[in-house]
Length: 329
Ligand code: T6T
Image (cartoon, rainbow, N blue to C red; front, side, top):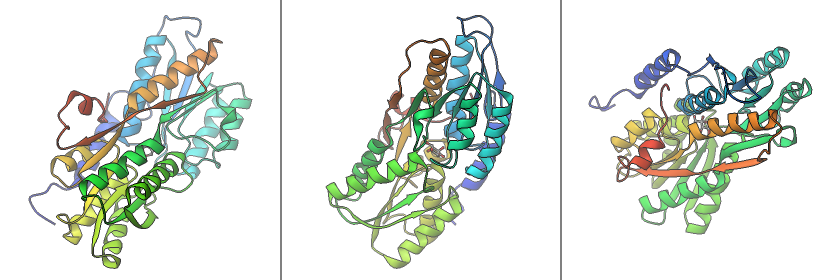
């Protein structure tokens, strides 16, 4: 490893510590008085995983909106992005009978029954970020247009590698709606642009697995030119793998998400483009729609939010800065 480079594992550890210390980050709760007829209502937000800056930023947007509308919001997060870790949390939420549940399901089918139980107990359901195959139990679904984001990634990668060549797709987990859509968008975009997609693999949301995938791909295809990594942990690990293989000059990386680690990697040219989400806005809209549902006001069944492609050229622009995720509110 180049001793001049910071250890991204250390940055991640620091970020996780800050996330725990940060206001309104993981496993927090806030309430406010006043507001309309929903005043005093209890909302719960269950995110995909603790310490992930996308979810921290999403929860910040949700907390701010809850405060504005005078409802309480309790935020809970599993230790891993895994349905077996998220399900017990949802079961406990069902027993606590909130007025509304906002949730990012970590699997598009395994979480159906636990969420349905919460709905059957009388809560309004709003799906934020990820969704379910059977989303009919939700009053509203709010997410980035992930398919468009995947296509934007293909375009950014094609531009970076000069329009043609071998590329690799690293997804973070099968059966997760955001990942499936980003992968599909990327595949379609790559096909349209004439890129040669040599492999598509999953890193199980673990940076170290993404690093191994990149090294194995380079051993099979030494002329690999580009990688699209579908979330922050995949992108972080892909960059580490490239550095360890000494192929950074040859291979370009486009990653989804723009957390502090990813932005630092972009600054150092270890990653060349990031597809950033409107994380706080997704949380804000989630609370807004849940409260509308509770107050019997019109609810939008589906809301798609945009994404921003951040490169070294535009990373200091106000638009790019606004799209970056934070370690705390
Ligand atoms: O990319 C986000 C989120 O949209 C996805 O569903 C899971 O991974 C992240 O939280 C980033 O780590």
